[in-house]
Image (cartoon, rainbow, N blue to C red; front, side, top):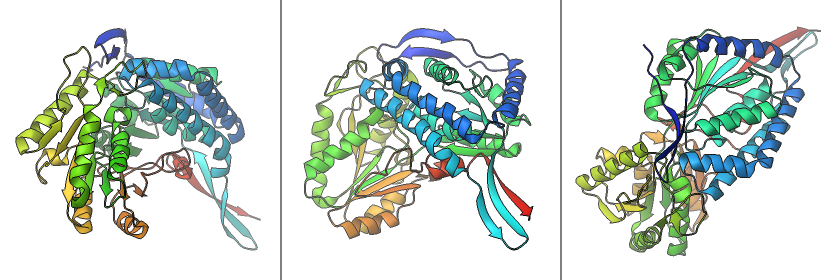
Amino acid sequence: MTTSLSYKTIDPATAEVLKEYPGISDHEVERIVQDSKKAFAAWRQLSIEERAAKVERLAQLFEENVDELAAIMTKEMGKPIAEAREETEFSAEIFRYYAKNGPKLAADEKVSEDDDVVSYIQRRPVGPVLGIMPWNFPYYQIARFASPNLVLGNTIVLKHAESCPESALAMQRMMDEAGIPGGVYQNVFANHEQISQFIAHPVMQGVSLTGSERAGAAIAEQAGKNLKKAVLELGGSDPYVVLSTDNIQAAARQAFATRMENTGQACNSNKRIIVMADIYDEFVAEMTTLASALQPGDPTAGEKNTYSPLSSEKAADTLMSQLDQARQAGATIHVGGRREDLPGFYVQPTVVTDIPQGSDVYYEEFFGPVVNIFRVETDEQALELANDTQYGLGSAVFAVEQERAEKFAEQLEAGMVGANSSPEESAEVTFGGVKRSGYGRELGPVGMDEFVNKRLMTIKK
């Protein structure tokens, strides 16, 4: 017996259910897979330049429909409208990057040649692949998975988060309007058992998931059992280390602004801020002032000095439970730490310190507007604390002394590292982590190298 998932749009600012959507039936799984297989046979026969032209048109459509697409995202998961527009524009940049660079990135690479024989590494599509995407970046997450695969010639079955059905349907509409043929990209409102059927099906060649550590473990187990390639982008508890600064208030403002992006709901957000003792007190005081100044606001309004709701009731409840655990463990809540007495899913911006190293909550990821600050006495202590995590997604270190920052950054255990900068985010650079943050990479040149047959072709002259 299958377990139904409820695909519905709930306004996070009001908790109002706006619309519900039916899921697919069990018998539709086989049809969807066969449609993907059939579409692959034709899609792969197009030249890579022809496929890239379709993806370029997709980029144009995202640019032409920024306001509409952003409004859908804000309505469904509460992203501040200005950030929603930025995400939509960033998605267009990703589509365009692969449309422009994909043919070059996938070009044959000569690896050996003598008088009689020449050998190449060719990058060829593998077939239908499954994407399982989260709610926190409804378009960007799809763009970075779909773009390289569409250009390569793979076909896609896409399962979006249950809370983002309108965003999922908007993406499907953009694909259709861009001229992506039927069956090449298929949005499915599937449940967990149906996802397992997709992964196990011999036609499907791989699965990419962006989501929680728990979901990643489940998908990895199923993919391994069925000998399928998997790419996993999971959680993060990124260290953000401030060793020295010539302007404490400015350093705190920068760290705070980074943490509050998407209301703190980003895998690679600076969730653990590690500060040297001589600047710690003033840094915490400035953070507390900044958090205190924010008031709950309508994410569609774009008003200054406001914060948005979390994406769901579950997200708010989980965060409140973690803050209660932190209190019980002996942490200090300087400001916030409460639900607002309002409709919707508003949790106050919170500044917390003194979470004991080794406590259960110390190792958890705060997915919301929580600034978690630690005091250290030496660079060595800062490094030990930064790397004391099960995750390894991103990290950053800041110091007035450039050599000090770079030396520290070299020792950070993460997939993305910044010295006097947060790790760059653009279509051109790689995204991914180590340890329990997952494996595989997206974006940049290596984004073309995951779901691809790196085929050896040897030709006798």
